[in-house]
Amino acid sequence: MTTASRLTARRGLAAAAVLAAAGCALATAIPAQATATPAQIATSRANGVAYLRTLQGADGGYAGSGLSNEWAFSAFAAAGTAAADITPGGDTTKNARLVYRNQLAAPTWPSANPVVTDYERGILNSYAAGIDPARVGPGRNLVADAVSYWQTAEPGYYGSSANFNGTVFALLALGGARTQAGAQRVPQPLLDLSVAAVRANQHTDGGWNYSKAAGDPTALGQPGDIDMTGAAMASLCAAGVPNTDPAVVAAKTFLKNNFNPLNGAFKAMYGINTDSNGWAVSGLNACGINPQGPDFNPSASSKTPVDFLIAQQFNPGGGFRYQPTDTSPSAYASVDGLRAVAGGGFTAAPPTPVTAGEPRWAATTAFTPGTAARLALVVDDGTGKPRACAVTITPTGTTATLGDVLDAAAGATPSGCVGAVTPASGSGAVTSLNGVANAGTSSWKLSVDGGAATAAARSAAINLGDTVSLRYGS
Image (tube, rainbow, N blue to C red; front, side, top):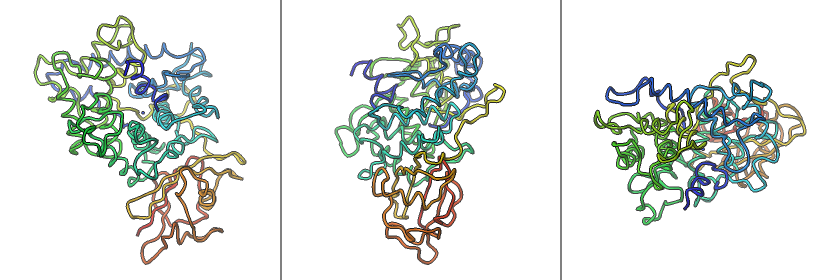
C-alpha cells in the first residue's frame, strides 16, 4: 500500500471507511528522567494550536471533500481550545463549530455512498467540537447513523467485518462520545460484543491491523501495525476495559517491543513518522498509560515517544513534519502530533468556549413536526445477544413516545431489531417483546441515554437524539 493510500484509509476514515477518553495529563505525570518537560509540552501545545488555526478556511470550515482537516477538532479539544472560539479573522458568525455543525446537518453529507467510518469520524469530531453527535440537527443523529451499520450476522461488528477498523472506530465513538451530562449513551452489553470482536482480532504479537484477522491463524500471526494498535487499545479502554486487562497489557508490550529509545520513535510499517507515533501515544493516553513512563523511558539518555513528536515540530510555526527528513509541515501529522502531545486519545470532551454567549454544547433539543428523524435503538432480551438498529420516525409533535418508536421499528436498519410487541397499540406497559414475556420479577425496562431503567410503557416520552434501550430482566 502506498503512503497516500494508507493515509486515505487511516487519516480520513472517509474514503476507506475515529476515544477514547482524553488521556492522563502529561504535565503532571512525568517521571524525573523524562526528557520532554512540562514546559516543553506546554510550548508544543500552544504552538500546535496556533498552527492548526491557520488551517481554517475563509468560510470558517475545516471539513471538506476527501482528506480534510476536521480531525483538528479532536486535537483542539485535547489542547483545551474550544471549536466555537476558532474564527477566521475574528468573525464569530463563521466560528468552526457552527460551520462544522451545518456541514454535518446537511442532507448531502457525507456522500451519496457513505460508509460507517464517515459517521464514526463525525461522532468523534463533533463531540470534541462541542456538538452533541446525536442532536446535530432535526434530521441528523450520528449515533443512530453509525448504529445502522450493526452486523446482525456478526454481532459486535459495524460495517463490513473485513474492514476491521470500522468496528474499532465504532467502539471508540460509541464508548467515548458521551452525553452532555457525561453518561455512556449505549448499554454496556452492546459495547461488550464489540470488545469481544476487538479481542478476537488481536494478533499473536499483541498488535492489530486494519483488516479482520479473527479465526484466521495465518492473519493473527502476521505483524501488527503501530497505528491500528494505538486505536484498538484505545477502543477497549473507551468501552471500560482497564489498562491491567491482558489485551491492553499485550498491546503495550507490542508497542514497547517496537520502540526505539534512541530517537523515541515506533518502528512503523512505512518508516518512523509523526502520525504513527501520534496514534500510538493517543492509544496509551486513552488507557491512562504514561508514554513517558518506564516502559518508554528506560534510562536517563532515552528519548520518549513525546520527545520524538516535539522534535518533529517546526517552531515557532507549530506544524509537525510527517517524517524527520521533511522540510514542511503536514496537516495530518500536525493534528496527530498535537493531540498526542496534549494528552488526548481519539476524541476529548469539549472545553467551555471563552467567546461570550457560546455554550459548551450545541444541540437541537426537540423534534420538528413532520421532519423525519433517526433514533438509535438497542433491544436486549437478557440472553447476552442484544440487537441494535436505527429507527426512523416522523413525529407529529416536538416529542414522541416509545410506542412511536416501536411502531416504526418494522422498517429499522438493520431489520429484525423489533418483532411482535404486546400491546401492539395504545399507551400501556410493554408486556412482551420479540416473544419474551414479562414473568415473575423479570420484565421489560426502558433506559434513555444511559439513564435509570424504568418500566417500559408505550407512553414513555422520547426526545430528539435519545438512545433508546429496552432490556428484559429483574
